[in-house]
Length: 133
Image (tube, rainbow, N blue to C red; front, side, top):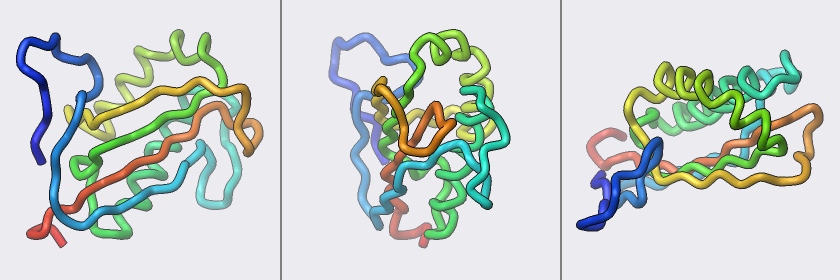
C-alpha cells in the first residue's frame, strides 16, 4: 500500500489524499452504531462511531483483513454540530482502533439515516495484500 501525496501539497490531517494498493479487494457495507443484535446501546454520536468502526473491523476480519488494509472510508453523519463537538473523542477512538492508519476518507453530512436513532454510518473499502491472505 502506498500513500499518494502530490508534491507541494500540504499534508492532510486525519486522512490520506489517496492510496495505491494491490491484492484482494473487500467492500464493507455501511455500518451503523448498533451491536451484533442490531440494537443501539447509545443515542450519542461518539459511542455510535466507536461501535460502527468496530463493526467495520469485524466484517473486514471475516475476510482476514485488519485496520491497516482499509484504503477508503466514507462516513455519513446526520448531526454536523454533534460531530464537530465530538472530534476529540472520535480521534481517541480512531487511534485506539485504527492506530496511525489514515485511509482516503470522505465525510458527508446527510439529513437522516435509515436506522434510528443512528447518527453515523461508516463504509469502507480494503485491499488485503496477496501475502496476507
